[in-house]
Amino acid sequence: MTRTEDRNPIESAPRWIVAVTGTYLCLGALALYVWSHAAPAFSMQASPGDAEALSVIAMAAAQTWLCVLVLRAFEPGAPLRRAWLLILLSAATHVAGGLLSQAPAAASLLNPTAPLGRADQIHWTALLLSGPVQMALLAAGLLVALRILWRLGFWVRPKATGWAVAGIVALFTLTRFAATAAGQFTAEGAISLVRSLLLCVLSVEALFLWLSAARMGKGPIAKCWRAFAIGIFVIGFGEAAVWAIGSYCPGWLVAALEWYVWFPAVAVFALAPAHTVAAVRRATGRVASSSSSLPVAGFPRTASAN
Amino acid sequence: MHPRTGTLVSFSDAELNPGRSRRIARHLQQCPNCQAALDRISQEKRGLAALAGPDGPAIDTQQGLAAVLAGMARWREAPAPELRSRARAQIEIYFGCGAASFMESPGIRADELMAKTLALISTFLGQEAAEAVTGEILRGLDCAALTAEVLP
Image 1 (tube, each protein chain N blue to C red):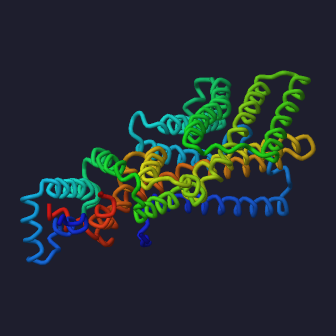
Image 2 (cartoon, helix red, strand yellow):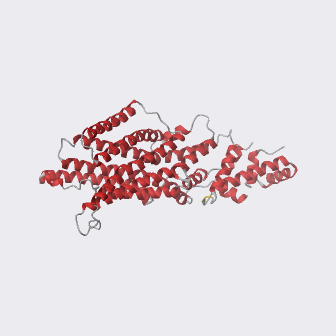
Image 3 (tube, rainbow over the protein chains, first blue to last red):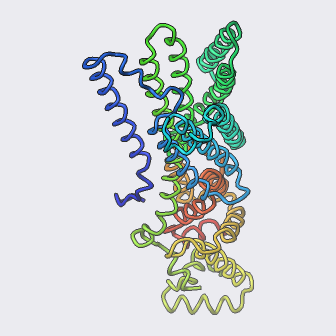
């Protein structure tokens, strides 16, 4: 049952995602170091604001593609198909939102959206798509997956530590809610609040996903669902950190932090379908590769005898 | 004197020496019970062989799988250790040791473990992967020994 090293490129997708993320973070840290020492700090303020980094969009596009590959493995009516469809839609809305957020950012006549003069609408649509809509779809998909996991017996009751983490997230959401309600209520603030509430729901789901995956072990399917949990934890941690230090630190640092939170988070989300695709390829591809190498004791002879 | 099940399996595989084979054949002509047992052995082997032939799983694996699982349901008391260990190995590959331990509750039968394994693989990786894993579990399994072990 041993496997040779003739890996299908798709089976190596998790390794590629980890390698790209590691390289991106190392290069980013190096660039940040060089900029902060070699140039005035305000040069970092040329961040695109609410626009998603192209690298994040590219990784979300990779996640979308991998989700499509996963979806193909399931026949219509399969229990987990609906979960993967919702996760695919979540990734696709992230890509769409990210691309739309880039469109009004380019103040050029070459930009096809410029003559329309609808930069505001595009901006809000992008914020909604890559924020609440994406998170709501992800939460719905993970809920379907969790119900299936529980139905199959992978239900684990959280311990005190787990509830403490969920409590901290809930407390953070309430604090943000109170802070926003006390100040001037803007549309951007409302979207941010909805995001926080959804993040709260996602964090609880992530807690259960983590426990269920931990019960499974360290196989690729367990890694897949654990990756979703890690991605949500990274986003939660990043949002909390950005919000907490936003008032005390310069804007360029917050912008940089947002960049370094979102890319790993999206990369981890892309890792989830990558693990499942690798497992599917491993299962289905092994039949062809192993039929000539595995010993066949009994079957050919009995088949011919009958 | 009726031949034992193992002898019938060997007879169906043409593994007996010519003299003994002739004696068994003569006995089968006179004994409907042994003839029925031989038919049952042949039927079971055809089901398994169709599912795990040398060229991978059969085309219509879903029906083949149903047939094998139905056959295994009759083997309730059979230990079938090889089948059990293979099913466990597949769970460990795709889920991890935790899932394997969790599924292998005390007293679980080999056919139940096999059915649970395939249900899990089918749920999380799709039907095609489940069919491939079925082939992987059954490929190379000593059909004759398993049949001899489980048949009364």
